Amino acid sequence: MDETRQREALLEAIENIADRIDEEREYLTELDSAIGDADHGANLNRGFKAVMEKLEAMDDDADVQEIAKTVGMTLVSEVGGAAGPLYGGSAMTASTELEDGITAESSVAFAEAFLEKLQDRGDARVGDKTMVDAITPAVHTYKKSIEQDDLPPLEALAKAVDAAERGVEFTVPIRASKGRASFLGWRSTGHQDPGATSTLFMLEEILAVAEQYLEGDTDVDATSPTIPDEEPEEE
Image (tube, rainbow, N blue to C red; front, top):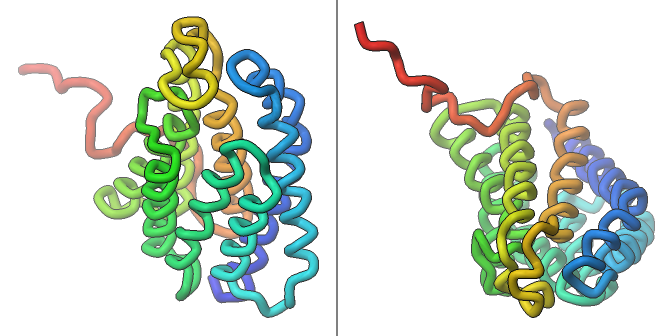
């Protein structure tokens, strides 16, 4: 895509994310009320409303790096709790990878930088029952699909979303080890993590926009094409 199309796609994805968070805010709050402060939906919704106001006031010639950085800065300043610094700070750091626009290579670099900053800032790893449980398999799947399996970006992104969905499901039976949910001990089991859920919503909206701008097949799952589904039968 040329620079103008990249900018259009990114702005549309952000707008769709803002709309999705607004639609799902009560559900996210419900999830958070079980193991947290019951404010995840409201905080994120407030943050993305502020993001949309900032983007509407930006110059028409702002590039994708500047847009991504603005999203991050706004979330840091407007979203309370841990979500603002985690989502926003990670987006700010990762935005530097988009200096030359959005390509398969730069999107992988953005995803890796986002995840690295998220883990450093939140000190969370897979299995801690946080948003990391959704974004880690998504990033690893996307990177492998692009760099090892040589898949087109749209197909790789679809696989990443499926991996994130599996990560969200993974949070339900496990015990929280980070954040306020960890105070509940074993009582945190049986509940879906709100941060992992909102991460999935964002990735789903990014995929929906990518389907409009990129060519390819999205009817796939996170299974690697280099790994057979079944063992070959012995002759």
